[in-house]
Amino acid sequence: MATFWALPTAFLSGTAAAGSYALINSVGNLGGFVGPYVIGAIKDATHSFTGGLLVLAAALLVGGILTLTVRHDSFLEQVDTIRS
Image (cartoon, rainbow, N blue to C red; front, side, top):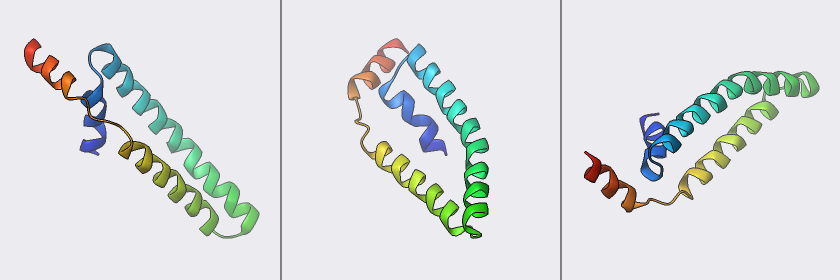
């Protein structure tokens, strides 16, 4: 979790970083509603939890791949040290 929260400041600064924290919270809250709903809907349709858990595993895999594609910008680190 700590690495996930530090990721926006690795390539964003100022108000963009603050907005990214708001987006993380919004997606997390949305996931707290959608995840159980999807598992329940798929369980009702298939009478098994396997399909719902596979959907959540696929979402986790896509999120991991997207995280790995983010590029690190060392210029932003230099700007933050100059401001301090």
